[in-house]
Amino acid sequence: MLLWLVLFAISCGKTNDTQLVVSAALPVFSVDSLEIVIPELPTDSILAFETQKIIAPYDLVQTKDEKFWVSADRLEHQIILFDQLGSYLAETGRKGKGPGEFEGATILHIGWDNDLYVLDSRLQRITQYELSENQLNMVSSFSPSSSSELSTYYREIYVTEWGNFGVICTLIDYKTGEEEYSLVELDEEFKVKKRLLTMPGNEKMSLDRWNHVNHLAGKKTFWDLNGEWFYHVSSHNTVINKYNVRTGKSTSLSHLLFEDRRLTEEIRLELLDVAYNMTERSDKIHEAFVDVEVLPLFQDFMVYENHYYLVIYNPSGSESTELIRVNEISGKIEFADIPLSLWKVKAGKQMIYGTVTSGEDAQIRVIKFTD
Image (cartoon, rainbow, N blue to C red):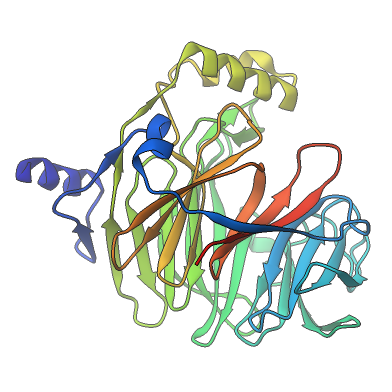
């Protein structure tokens, strides 16, 4: 057993700068039996927002003081403000490239100053807002990318008491779509000061010489920042990597293991069907699945205080969200099966929240767990 753990540590890519912490007896799980073998994380209630004013909610965040929620509408190109009970308060924005206008799907972040920061992923522009019960007041706008950085894209920003940070994606090879992510330190105008660490980019399916999309069963990297710690994890293993933005300390840890999820012919056909609906280049998509043998374990990841959440990869598209919550300090593992297909899941105090994109109506939901 000891030899096996040593081999496991080596396979997880331990470096001289990173300490890998592995429990002496890691539990091993199968995705198909989680509901049976892991204690339930019981749901206390599910809060539904007023969504008459929003067509396609894309992201959702809560303010630090817990007074407001903010969502982005990716079709109306608006930012919507809600009170703590999900009632509509105000909105701002429209389609365009001018001040207070948006072009692409937006990524939302509440800074430690309790202001809202909106990252327009298409314009690569960051807009700062102060929030009140009646309106969203624009404070500043930043366009940190330069023409010399055409292969680099901002994917996330964080405004912390230790400075500004972000995740950028760099395209390494145009012919294959190969990319990498980097955690970077940013200046006051969100321009890159220093790269702090690199992470693998998402595995791609090549449709033609210049067009590549994320592989439906390929390896992906997920991340989150909580307090002074930046976390990142692969979709295909359970090692959680941590980087302290204040001290520069790195560590890796694991509290559980999963058996490989074999790709059955039935699931392969389901994934191919989804891929065909995404594009007409069916011959290339078929080639992308020829050598796939295992499925991802996870499709999302988030952290709040001493807990991290791993959302189980759902290849069939069923109307549910399965997740595991792990207490980073005690190692306690809990399982929840939520009857909603959630998108862009985030975690808060005894809750998770996100948007529901399936069905007739777009929805926003907050799932509260029993204390």
